[in-house]
Structures are given as C-alpha cells and as structure tokens.
Length: 251
Image (cartoon, helix red, strand yellow):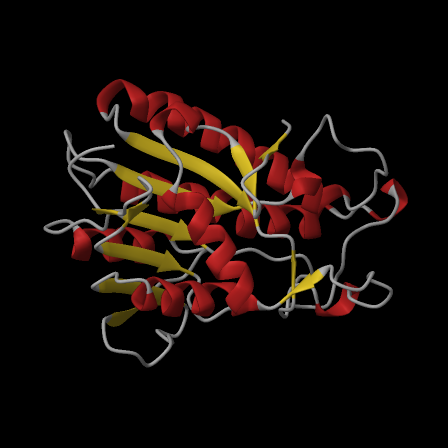
C-alpha cells in the first residue's frame, strides 16, 4: 500500500486519520481510544447522540444509522480530508424492544427481520455508499465493517439466529461487492469484514452465561486485536472477512 498511513518496521500500516461509525458502543469507543493511542492524529467518532471518548484527537459527530441523509452529511463534512481508515462498529443482536435472536423458524417476524437488516446490513451499506464515494483515486485506504462468524454460510452447523445470521451474511456479500468495484478505480483499497469474537459489551451481555473461561474479550483487547489485523492487510485480501486473530472466516 502506498500514499497513506505510517509504515512501521514490520511493514504494518497505521492510519494518520480514521473515522469510526458507532463510537459510543463498547468496541467503537475502544477503537477510537486505541487508534489515538497508536498514533492516529484525527479520529472522527460518530454516534447517534454525538457521544465519543473525551481524548485529544477525537472529533465527535452525530449520525443516525437509519437516516441516510445524516450519513451523507457526515461524509460530506470529511470530503476535503477523507480519513485513511473507516471502521463501521455498529450492529445489533437484540433489538431495542428486547426481541432477541430467533432460535427457530417458528419465531420469524417480518417486522423484526426488517429492523435487523436495516441496522446490520442497510445502515453499513449506506455508510459505505457515502464514505467510499469521497475517497480520492491514487491513495490507499481501508474500509472495514464489524461482521460475525455466524454470518458464514459454509460454517453454519447449528442453524437458528435466523435474522442475525442473514443480516451478517448479506453484509459480507455487500463488502465483497464493494471490494470488487473499488479495486477497479482504487487499486490500493482494502474493503473487509471483521469478526471481533465475543466481546464484553451490551450486544453480548444477554448471551454471556455459560461461556467457557477465556472466551469473553474486553473491549480494549478486542479493539487492539482488530486494529492489528487491519494494519497488516493488503489489497490482495480485500473482499474477505477476518477474525480477531487475522484468520479468514469462510464465506
């Protein structure tokens, strides 16, 4: 990769600027802090209420995942100096009304399915639409969105969690599409999905009981794991999904 980021002795690339959509969540807030701690000069930190960690270099902004105009406005504000990394750290497993993952097809509800897709698939797609659109040609950049191993079709051996699985599988397909499209005009680009593992956050809270020792990761550790993976990716790996160890998640 050339033209962006700070290159360390081992060839890893660290961004001078970044944007995190979902900065008020456990992983999102930790990503913002870890980016600044690692040397990123400016982190645009987006959340619904404009909340973000209070640290030098972090610049909060407000956006609504279900309001495309707010996403477009956020991207437009960054157009003159686009971030080198964009990370979409949004997503839900349990809906705001308490509706959790369906364990059987008998529990499928069209309204709940539509909401899950709106938050886990369509919202990130709109962020990609507007953020990819401001990226200049001839400069490397990375676009990443939090996905999940359960979005893998070939690795699905348990079933259940229908809407959540489907929303993440659809997100993974969109990321692959975006990667192929951007490679034609921006050959130094990287577009990927990231599986953070089971992180101690509001998203996983209702499902933490019974987890084996060592399987639950603190947000700070999860953020550092994900950023380490991102810093080592190349355009040849674009379009794939990687877990927090850097291993590829099967499609």
